[in-house]
Length: 100
Image 1: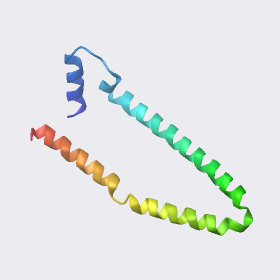
Image 2: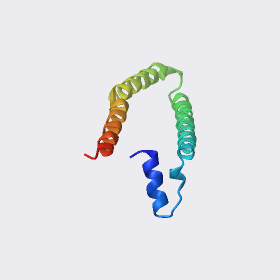
Image 3: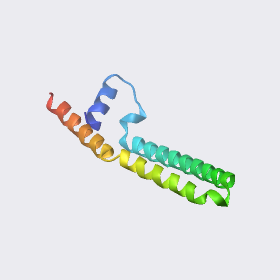
Image 4: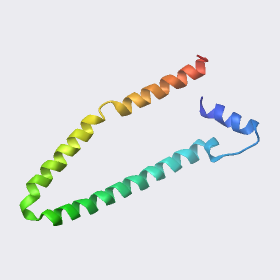
């Protein structure tokens, strides 16, 4: 179902939603993503400073090892998932358009 189909459905029942305007949806999504990313980065800074202060200079190597392993495992855990979601979203959209 493309943007045109959604807009026709919304207009046929007489309601108007900001979802019928792709530019508004895109802007809203970008702003939401930016705010969420900023909050996550802020939390990372706060927890990093707290951890560094609590372990002192003696535990820097351990903290670095923990962060490096956690980041590596997190990255490895998402291998291919964003691409697969994009692919299947497109595939489902194509099936809906073909009426299958």
